[in-house]
Image 1 (cartoon, helix red, strand yellow):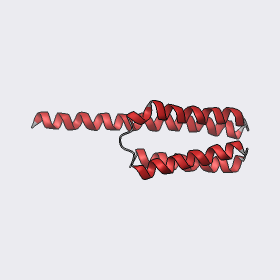
Image 2 (image 1 turned 180 degrees about the vertical axis):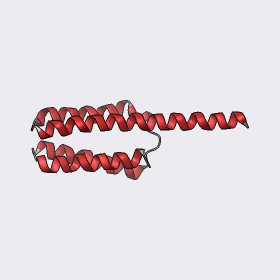
Image 3 (image 1 turned 30 degrees about the horizontal axis):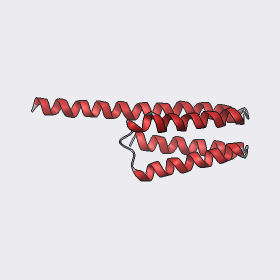
Image 4 (image 1 turned 60 degrees about the vertical axis):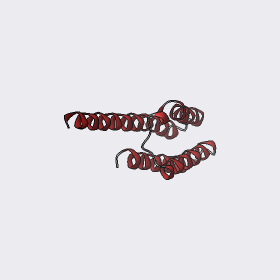
Length: 111
C-alpha cells in the first residue's frame, strides 16, 4: 500500500515538473518575442519563434505527454498565425497572437 502511494506520488511529481518545464519554456520565449515585437525587431522575433518551435519539437514534446490532440492543433495554428503576423510586420496582430498563445499554454499546462 505504501509502495503504491509512493509510485503515485512520484508520477505526480514528474508530471507536474514536466508540465512546469514546458510551460516555463514557452512563457520565457513568448516574453522575449513580445519584447522584440514591441521594439519592431521582426527578424529577431522570427528567429526566436523558430527557436521556440524547434526546441519544443526536438526536446520538450517527449516530456509533454499530457497535451491532447485538439490543444496541440490549436497551438500549432497559433504559432502559424504568429509567424504570419511577424512576417507581415503586423505588430497589433502579433501581440494579439502572443496573448492567445499565453492563454492556451496556461490552459493546457495548468488545468
